[in-house]
Structure formats: structure tokens, C-alpha cells
Length: 429
Image (cartoon, rainbow, N blue to C red; front, side, top):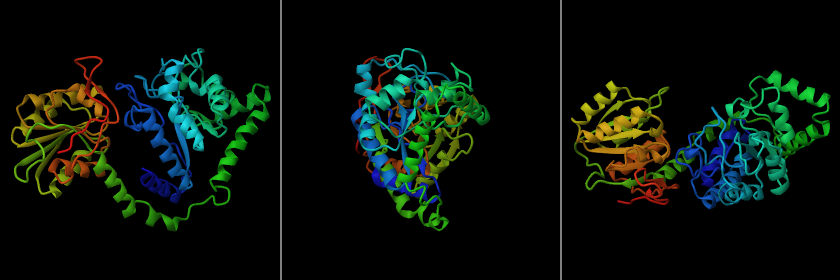
């Protein structure tokens, strides 16, 4: 972990980025969470805390300020704060047991900054204000109880979660009053600036309060060497960004984390003969995931055809994929957050019903299998970049032994309260 993040930090620093809005300290305990998912390290507070500290130390060792987020914990919500205002119903005891441990440990480890969440937490503040605007949460809990005196930054002020209750001219003022130091992405900068200046002039905000935030920001800049060395050396970029060592670390990680959850006898590894179809989800802006997997399987010596169905497959694309599957020996179908897209669900269900041999792969959140628990062979990669697809190809062909383990529990939709796959599940073949 630390070697991977240190490489990321070195690349960021080499191009002049001196603060990263990471790592995510949220503990993802809700399979329906539409905004966190694989951004979290999982459902275990202890594991999340360990990973968050390793990540923040690696960033900061590379001279990049780390930002733990989203305080006080965005892991148990079914609402996306970009488009709505989530309410976290955890009791204070549950917050102390589930949500707060990664933040406590990261603060003790010297986190440079903390990002707020646009979430309502009645157990901490019954006013209905989101945490970003909550004095009890940011000053009462974060500053006073947890003893944090570093820089507090907001999540984007353009998100619906912080704009629903107050207008854009009030949000910046209320955030500063709550204990924030940095206002991120106000929808209209002029409105935010004028509102803060007016609040200082009329006494709602004091100059002393503004000076506190300025002092924290300057202290962070000095501590991270930004004052002494504010500019990046462009000569370092070519040898740092995308270096062979960094790419090798990324490949080792995905090789170890690709997770096999179910394997129909004889389905894996794919043999060197026969024809393979790669189909399913692709980024609509730049279809490349199915193509990357196709290339990686071809490099392993297989005969491969690729038929991308895009992010939201139409009936025509589904029918075309099924027809193609029937003329291939094995079909590998990719999904990405299939719970939110009926087209992806219909595609996998149609392929499974066709009688073709199907290998189903979630290339982001592993929860996709809840939509088709009958899938006989199922893997998850947690990412859909080319590095992850090379690792997937290695596992599919037997060149890499699957070693990944689930960082979350996948519930059984047919039997509430039971697990389809428990935390830590993963096969090795």
C-alpha cells in the first residue's frame, strides 16, 4: 500500500500538485451506497483505519498534503450527496464503533487536512444542517472532542447536498462559522467572496475567525515545504510520471486483489484453444475496458472477439451479445454498478439464460452479483483500467492465481440477514 501511494504522491508532486483530496476514510457498510463504494477500503473500521493511515503517511512522506474524508463518515447512505442530502441514522454509539475510528486514528497520525461531508447526522446535530455547516460536528466533535487543529476543507459547495437548505450566499458563511478553513468550489466565486466579506463587515464573522483559518493554511504550506519551494521542476516529470517502477507496483497490486468468488467446475482457467467473447460494460465517453481485456487475453494466446454493449445496453445490443455468445466457447461479460441499470441486468440474465458458458466480472463494486446470484462463475476487479484488465486476463487464463478477498459482505437478496458471500471470501484455484 505505502509503496503504491508513495509513487502516486511522487507523481503528483512532480507536476506541482501539493494537496490530494484523499484518502477516503468512510467505512462502506451499505451495499446500496451510490457514491462511496470502492472509494472506501471496505466495511471493517479497523481495516479502513489501517489503510487510511498507511495512505496518508505515504502521501505526506512524498511532500503532498493528505485529506481524510468525508467527515464524520459517508459509508452508510443510499443517497448521493452530489444530487441529494443523505441522512445518516447511526446512533452515537454506532458512529463511535463504525464511522469514527478511521478518522480518530488518522488524526492521531497527523493528517494534514480533513474534508467535510454533505450529510445530516441527527445523533450529532439534530438541526438538520449538513455536517459541512454544522458547528456541533466540525467544532464540537472534530475540533474539541477529537482535538484536530489542522486544515478543514469542504466537499464541493456545488453539490446538492449542501445547497438544499440554504442559498449559495449563506453556505460559505455558515461553513466558516461551523469551523471550515477552505471553501471548495463555490458555484459562483463572486457570490461567495461578497458573502464572506459582508459577514465580516456586519460582525457575523470576526477577523479573528478568518485569521484562524489563514494561520492553519499557512502553517500547512510551510510544513509541506510549499513556501520554501513553491514550483515544480519540470525536468522531474518525465522520469517520475508513469515510471516503470510505479507501473510495476500497480500491476502487482491488481494481480493480488482480483477476486474469484465462484467458479463453475471446468470454467476456469480458460484453455488455450477455443474462441472467447468479451462483452458488457464500457465507459460511454471512451469505450476501452472491453478492448483492454480483449488485448490482454489475446496477449495470453487466446482467440478473442470484443463486442462492447456500452454503459446502458439497448435491447438490440443485448440481442447481438447473446447471438455472439452462442458462437463462442466462453463469454466474459463485464458489469459496473449493475444495480442501477436495468440494461446491464438484462444483458447478464439473457446471457446466462442462453445456455452459453458465461464468466461474469464486476469491474467496480462487487455488489453487482446480488442482481444475478445464479451466475456460475463470478469475479470482481474493483477497477476497470488497463492494469486491472491485465490482471483479470491473467486470472482467467490461469497465469495468475486469484488471491483477492472481499473487503465487504455481499448480502443474499433472497434471504435477508444472510450473506451471499461473507467478508473475506475469495477462491484460489
